[in-house]
Length: 199
Ligand SMILES: C[S@@+](CC[C@H](N)C(=O)[O-])C[C@H]1O[C@@H](n2cnc3c(N)ncnc32)[C@H](O)[C@@H]1O
Image (cartoon, rainbow, N blue to C red):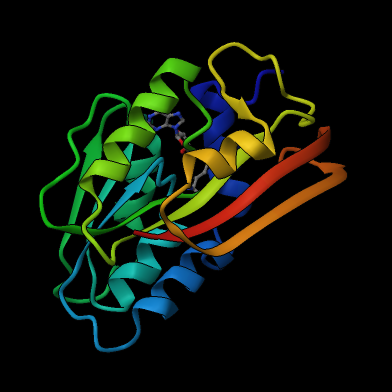
């Protein structure tokens, strides 16, 4: 099982639909503080919106990008805060321009789901798009992850991840390595970097 076909994503959204926002996102939002109003965030690979909902709830404007129509359908079917400013875009995040004026790029468990060249180019674009004081939050996968070597995915060594983040202030850089199961019940060795970085 590849765990990235459309039918698999639908099962993933269903399984995780009531989960709270990711700790990386919550940390980034907390660091911006309550004084931030009306700021713009982009969520790359937003899924059915567990993080998007939290950003909207805190008054952020959100551009939510996902390649799967089912993800955006489920996001829009959620009870959204009244008057919220949400722009869902169905696209591959490698292809989508990053809007001017963003303060936060969030990509929870999604950015590594593209080829290495696209991953590195995307990171360059994120880095360029972030203003001084802007943040990136999300996860990258390490080399000892049991999915390492799969086509269409990117895995980075700890040193490489740190080199990519050089010049940014690391508000969270946690390396997790663990045997577990995927949300769809398959055994997996996880090797994950949890990142919150401020430019
Ligand atoms: C593991 S899920 C994570 C969803 C959500 N961010 C979360 O934390 O629950 C990965 C999501 O990324 C999307 N995705 C995978 N590759 C993508 C790509 N190249 N461009 C846009 N979305 C992609 C999938 O459709 C899926 O919704």
